[in-house]
Image (tube, rainbow, N blue to C red):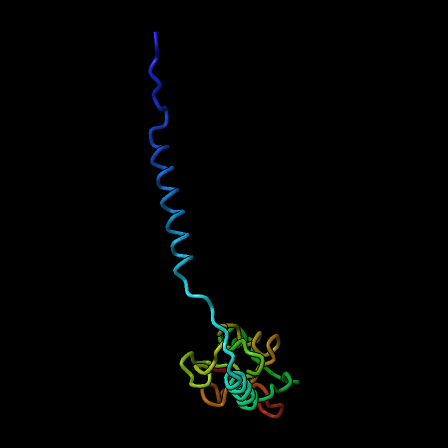
Length: 144
């Protein structure tokens, strides 16, 4: 008596075919990619150096953190925006401020107290002029 062998996993043959197909597509995609070409021109390196020099000249030095600030307790939890850039030294009250829109790195929404104490930021002259009083030692802050 001979027994007929039946495959207990009929889907297994489909998986083998599928794996072969995926392997073929991967090899084909890798073969179709163009190799990277290195520029042997000296002008590209010069252009990049000039652009980097222009960028560094355009960036301003960051001011030291404020030595004095007086933030009323009801304003301390107000939210402001800071640009997480090595040269940025101001906080913004409006997200659509033109200075903040020039930020090319991460923008963070933090509390006003944290922006001043932890990030060492001053107020923006465009969107948060009214908060300049928190850095003035002679000014008495009026409650809102």
